[in-house]
Image (cartoon, rainbow, N blue to C red):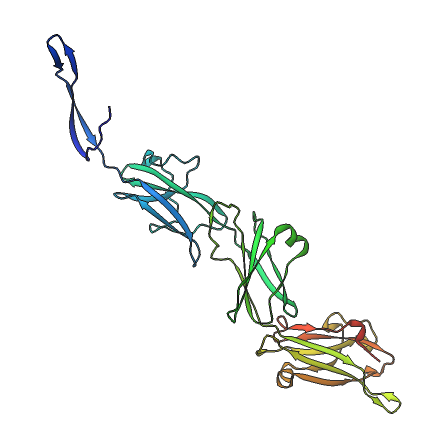
Length: 346
C-alpha cells in the first residue's frame, strides 16, 4: 500500500476493508497504526559544467530545493536519478568543489561528478557530469634558435597523449596553438615559429576523454620569450694595400627585428686557438681573447669593426677563430655565426 500527497508529520493510519456480505457491503472494523512522514528534498533535475577563464570549472544545477546539494563521486555505478538513499551511504563530498559549485579538480583528475540532494538523513540521487583536469606541464623552457623560430622543451605529463602549446604575442597579436603528439615530441623535439617580438608560451595537456568537460590546470606551464635580439659577426678579408692585403676585419652587428633590444646586452669576444695556432675554440676559455666588443658599444652604434692581426703572439701561418657572447643577457641573445670554414685569419 502506498499513500501519496501527504505532507511531513505524525499520522495515525486506519486501514479498513470492504467486502460483500449477505445483506450487502460490509465494512470491517479496521486496524490503526502510527506513522511518520519524513521530509524529502526536491531532486536535482539538471547538472552542467563549464570551464572558467580563471581555471577550473563551474557547476550549475536545477532543482534540489528544500535540502543541500552535495557533489560526490560514486566508487561504482551511479544509482538511478531519483533513487531514494540514506545520507549515511553517500560517498564523502568532493573537497575540490565548493558549495557554490566552483570546482578546482587536481591535475590528473578524470571523474564523473554527481549531484545529490540531501535533507537530514535522507537523500535523492541526481544527475552526473564527466570532468577532467589534464596533468600539469612542468619544466617548460623556450630558446630562440634562428630568426622567428624557437625550441620548446618540457617534461611530458604522465598519461597525456597530446599537449597543446600556445604562443601569444605580447604586442596583442593573434594567439597560435600547436598540438603536439607524444611520440613525435620524444623523437624529434619541438621547434615552432614564434615571430620576432616578445611572446608568452603556454603548454597544457589535452583531455583524455572526449566526453569530459576539461579544465586547464592553474599551474599550466608558462614561459616568457623575449623579443628576438641577435649579434652577428663576420670575418672579412682585409683591404688591398699595394701588393698585399691588410689585416682581416671583424664586423660585429646588432640585429633586433623584434624592436627595442633593451638593456644589458652581452659582450662579444673573438677567441683564437691556444697559442694562436691550436684547434678552433669550442668555449671562450679554450684560447686567447683577440678582440672584445662590449654590449654598450653595440647598443650605441649598431655595428663595430675591428682589425685582427694576422699572426697573434708572434706566431706564423693561418689560425682559426670563433666568437662567443659573455655576460649580460648572453643566454637570451642569439649569436648569428658565419660558416666556421670562413673563420680563419691568414
